[in-house]
Length: 127
Image (cartoon, rainbow, N blue to C red; front, side):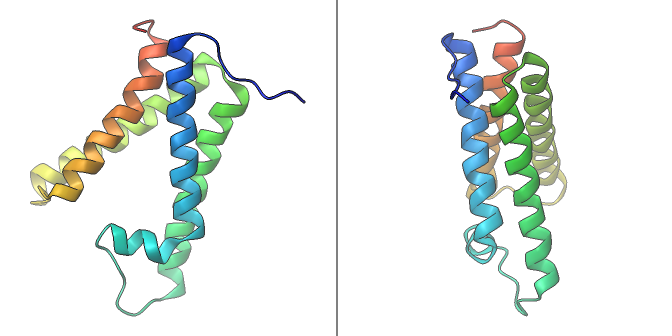
């Protein structure tokens, strides 16, 4: 099996966004305690259920972005970009309604918007 790397700039951006999300998802999946501390969400009791929920979220991100990398189809990039855009929208809701206007939330919002914009720009022909 040959490794596929796109030749067009737009598809390269979508590919890089999916690869970045895959790396982030692996980090979340394999280092849930560190991830929670970095996000300011370290559990006090260290319950295994909390770590399981975080690991499964990392697995979901890794699986979805890995699928986008392996299939490299516009419709998969569209689904990936839409999912990340919806995550950014949820973060905006949190910032507005939960009083979560912290530097960490704003930085993560910018990262989510960038990760969503790259595949969506490719799918809609903007790059």
